[in-house]
Length: 482
Image 1 (cartoon, rainbow, N blue to C red):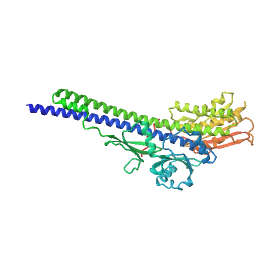
Image 2: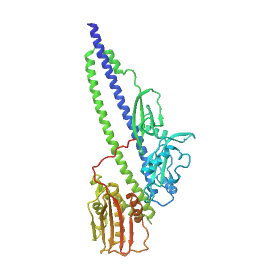
Image 3: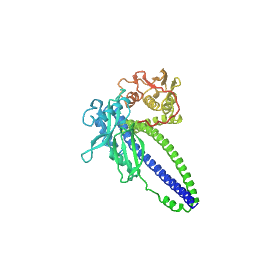
Image 4: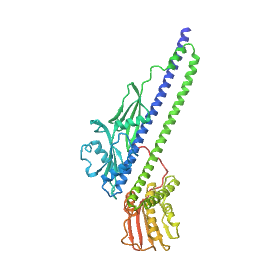
């Protein structure tokens, strides 16, 4: 009987020790997973800052007729310090005809990325390539390529590109995440054929490795975080082992408590992963919309400044155009960023001129819904036409009339016609203003259809085509698969 009691108590003790160790390793695994997610978020955040900066530069280049290298250098000087990313080299411009000249451009990884960007029209990061390091040697790196549109061309005609020192890029994210005791490696893609971009080793051995996808400019990279191997037995296991031979009941109760704690840890892990997924989706959606809005504001700022004769004209013109963006944003917010009727956009943009005096304004057309980005661009066009009409055209005279009529010429395309009558006679010598340039260049580029703008002596006539997309439920963007 003593032997049976000793064996029974020993079995309970060993089981309790096993449960303690399992719980400790599970908690350590949860901690490592959280750290890996934090590092991945920092890497994505740093990359998003760089992409936003490059996107703003590409917008300025695509909407300007100046020499692109000089304009890019001027833009970079003005924005220096606002978009600093550790490890990022200077932003440079490259025509499509030069893609393939030089040592760096000859890299197969960069050639593959240029082809992908030209096909998709979206920014993308390259695979692993080598660049000159701070000490003169070569270091692993990757390049982010941003397409630059040119007028009405459907395909990008040039690129803005920027190289990133992979080791410095990873070290910055580790410093921000405040993690210095883990082994971390960053690969240029998911899967077995990925190339190692950067790593930070640890003196402690490790076998608990967590993998996390990292989204950088439409490329899914792989992050591996390895936690140090824990000690053979935790202090609690030692105490339990020593006391277990004499207190069997206490060990049974402790095992039950630990089992419940493990279940709570599992529930917390599932909750954390769910919240992390939701946060990432919301962050990507917010980043996408803020990036587009900032790009629009930067473009308006740059072009308004070049067209303004004095500070008052600059402030008035910029304020009016930002108010136009705000009015359309209010409509999109009310529709929860779904589709917005053309009629609502037209009425919102005419509110600031129709309230000043009574005019005959005709707004007519079928029920047509616009996607958010198309609604913002269309609203800018209507704002410029209305402002021009209020200053020089039909809306500046009591007998003036304006007609805004649209129709569906195809199931997915609407044509909108702006026609003025009854206003002052339009001079043939009238100069080309910012509004004209915005409508014929930026609006035409964003809507992907040419704009017909005529300054007839009887009144201004403008015809533009707007894509029509079917209404659907609001849905967050999913992270692209690698």
